[in-house]
Image (cartoon, rainbow, N blue to C red; front, side, top):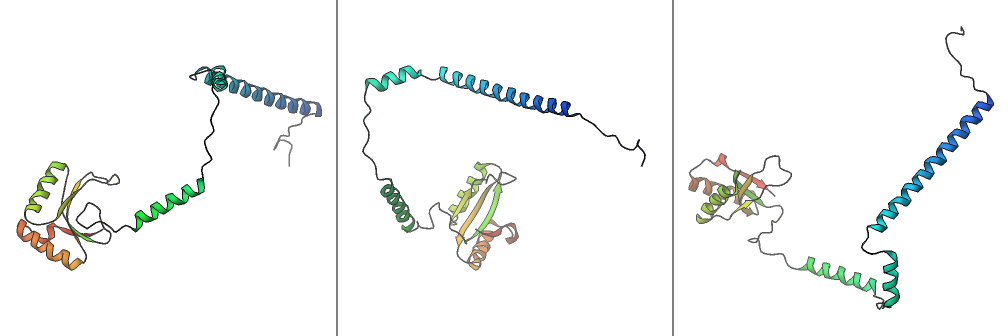
Length: 182
């Protein structure tokens, strides 16, 4: 190897000590600046509070604080858990309510951009004897559409029979609608 292929940095011991001390001094300066900024922040926070510390101390000295009786936190926690358990054990509401049951089949009749059109079509289906409902758009949907669904059928066969009845009363094809399991 020739000497021109690489360069070596040579630092004397006195220069190394000087660099080390300079780094320590710089670290101390940064630390002190941080402490200074912290003190200014606490001063600003105290001056913008609603009352100064002296006023708060004076109020505390003027009126003795009455301590509350110690509460049994554990018994309160147990009582709240029992209340939640009782609420879970209550019988579920009938399927005609607004609560959506899981694993039921629904027929999607249509999807509208505006709620008024969906409500109008839903009312038309209700007048024809079908249990229809308008579902608001989900926040996760890419397109905000109001969907009209009929049903809450326990089996797919029941949903298919209802689909044929809806198609015949609406005078449309069976393929214009589709069955969804929710």
